Image (cartoon, rainbow, N blue to C red; front, side):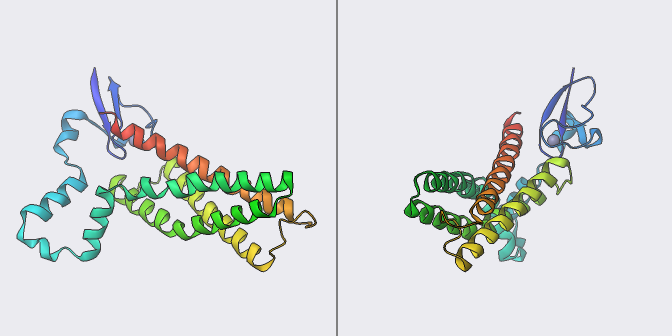
Length: 210
Ligand SMILES: [Zn+2]
């Protein structure tokens, strides 16, 4: 039995041949290398780190690159995604309770939660794109395309909801005729957050299997 490593996400496959498609990230068969070969290819990040530490040319590395390295080393994307992953479901729950029990205070709580997530989204998306480029070679497999689509859907949904709520503070009130469309957009955002989180978890879990 030969061990094969996915050069996109680091998934290890054991068998005579690599799989047709990586089960973790969807990369093609050609992205797999035999493990002995794979070990010669030092991961990009480690390369950069050792360069920075052991080399006098460190000064030439721009401040931006340093910040990016720091961001990756400290897993800023998996940390920052907790904001949408944790708070969007809470906002939806508050809204459901507000609708059932006609509680305007819960509706307001849901709205403030959304505002907070919207403010965090630039960090979530930026760190996600950087991580995709640096750790996953910017591979355009279904997993990453789905994640990027989900991130965009979340951003657009939140923007629409927050701007709508600002323009019409009564949009979710029992008398409002648009309250169900407003609710539906919450569900779309929740679905996108859930799917992106599920795929992200799968990727991180796959990487750690060595
Ligand atoms: Zn893979």
